[in-house]
Amino acid sequence: MKIRIFANPHDAGIYAAALAEVVVAAKSRPVLGLATGATPTVFYDALVNLHRCGLDMSPVVTVNLDEYIGLPTDHGQSYHAFMQAHLFSRTNLAPENTHVPNGMAADLAAECARYDDVIRRNPIDLQVLGIGVNGHIGFNEPDDLLLSRTHVVQLRQETVAANARFFPRMEDVPRRAITMGVQAILQAERIILMAFGEEKAEIVARAVLGDVRTDVPASILQLHRDVTVVLDLQSARLLPEGKAGSAREGY
Ligand code: F6R
Image (cartoon, rainbow, N blue to C red; front, side, top):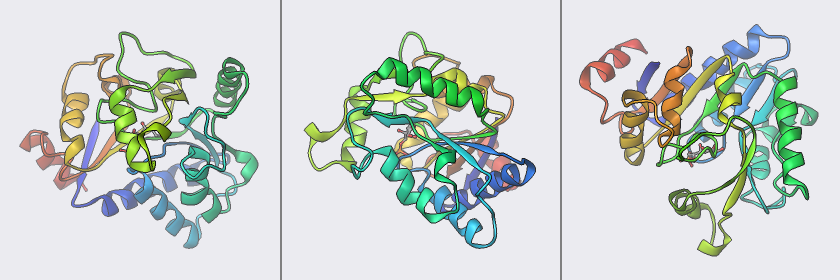
């Protein structure tokens, strides 16, 4: 794993967007795997800036990690709406090239199978990930086993609590989601894992330095050969000096 530690999320977002630009420029039909949540907003802002400076997003295909079950796509907190607001509506991405699971599907098993097919037809060149305070990636929650394929997940209490900051009332926070499985994530050519803030420091240290464990899903990324962990000073606080020091020299 390559670790890059920045003074602040803004600088980290610019770095992550520059990595994405390299992938976009290298392929005729680049595929970006994308995340939602607070963490990647700096990445999307920087990518939009690159687009305004000339980066053509029209050949890019996007495949999102997850979506809440039961929120209509036009609900302000749906991941469809998030992606529209932060990226899709601000670039020349073609709507038909953007993919987000349908959390309103009547047949959720069929929707999971359909999404696996989308992933199969669009192998991911670069997967952008955030990390939950409990170590989840996508919504692959800590458990005895990690599921390979797209599946319906019952969100853990700590995830519901963390997501509550985006909803007016606790009872409005979705309890279930559709998420890509770990196979799709690990099959991405390159991965960027982003984490910011003091509240992520402990889980970042466990994911990066600890053993590979299904109760720390992000630790499975240690098995991938091209992962860049993009941190700010707060989220990197529990990494040993040597690691942080060498990473600081590296950027
Ligand atoms: C969102 C996702 C989640 C988030 C994680 C961190 O698409 O897949 O794994 O990346 O919950 O969320 P934030 O960035 O809001 O702390």
